[in-house]
Image (tube, rainbow, N blue to C red; front, side):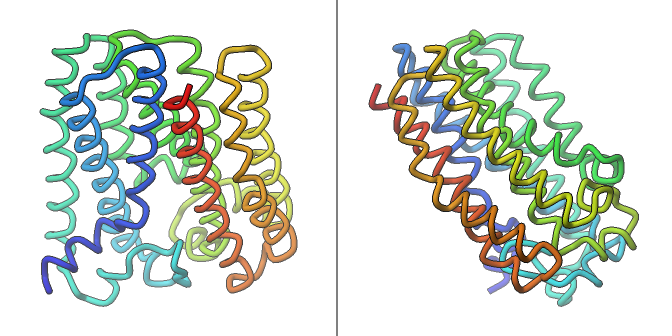
Length: 294
């Protein structure tokens, strides 16, 4: 039972994002004739540990700041609720989060040794962002940007580099859509938490703009996701099969229209939060599938 609680503390339902990002970066490399099974496995394990540490440390710092004591939890936002329920001790959760982060470090060092030193800046940047994300970045109006970079673009680019020992314009272009999608994941999840976040000292786009204007920005960022894919195909920097990622568009539209209508209603936002998660995972997975097929 205790082991299950620790597992739930990592918020495993969100860790699938790391898997599809690694698949996408690997698929781009595969499309160019590069694949190393061991590097693929180590990359997936390392990113999963890093992602778990983000979730666990976020839970710890939000509990310490009092945010999670005031937020209205939904299945998609508001933290795990485990610390609030007293199921685990805060010190233990902090150590667990740091343990996940520190365990991912030697994996990153090994992958840097075998693939090239140019991977090191991504690993160091990622480690710093993970630790200071909740305590600082979410208070400086840049949390959404760093979420999109750290759990969107950089994992795709880093995975591609690990397989090929190089960066490319195509990999960069292909990473833009995942970047916008992950930024929107955090962005939309901030809507139900706006009051608790404001009282807890956070300062993000939903607080700065208000929910009505923020809902329009959310729609704009979602549109940018699909424009990046279309632009990549038109410019011939992404394969034509990448257009199958547009199959996720109905879920994106549902998330957009629900958000525009229910931006200030927590319960009304739940269908939008769900559709948003489906959009993100489906789009990233379909892009990976397109590259594997190509």
